[in-house]
Length: 243
Image 1 (cartoon, rainbow, N blue to C red):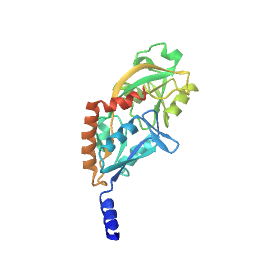
Image 2 (cartoon, helix red, strand yellow):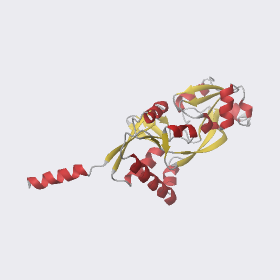
Image 3 (tube, rainbow, N blue to C red):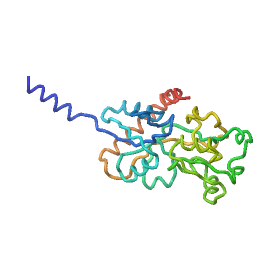
Image 4 (tube, rainbow, N blue to C red):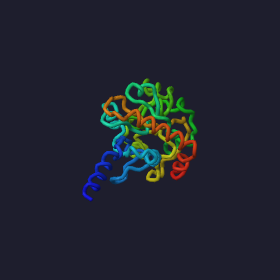
């Protein structure tokens, strides 16, 4: 009897799921955020559902400031992070997964500015925008907007997360904010959604460091599974819970 038990324990340990640790934004509700000790959000739910279909891997989340998440991937401290938008510069240190879902960035501002229905970005010259640290300007607002920031035509303030930037608007320390259309503004009733700017896909960005021998297998199986889930409508079903 003892031999059978020992044999069972050895077999179980040999086939235990390998941990896949992903960094994520701790302040990007409803997509990715920390609620007490629990990591929640649209991407969290989708990625959990993906790995539920890949039993050889067990996904774990490390919520943190977005800028720190970027550094964790650059240094190979974690296998990947989510949900970066694609840009060419990031390909120098990350490999993008298949797209997970599409986001739409919009203008957030007080009602007086929203009602002016300004043309973006031309009519925002001389105003101040708040942007989450580590977010790409071109990804949020397009190349023209990014060039206006670089030239100083539009001033910029950086915030650690959604809440900080919305507070900047509330306190009139910034004129407008750019982020996804679904971010939570319930605690900021004076802030309204305005002009749609652009669509972006969200991904897992995998490190290019060779610290993870199973990395290529993880990427391959994740991509295969997310493609099927999108085709079957499973990703859309998860997203609808947040809309």
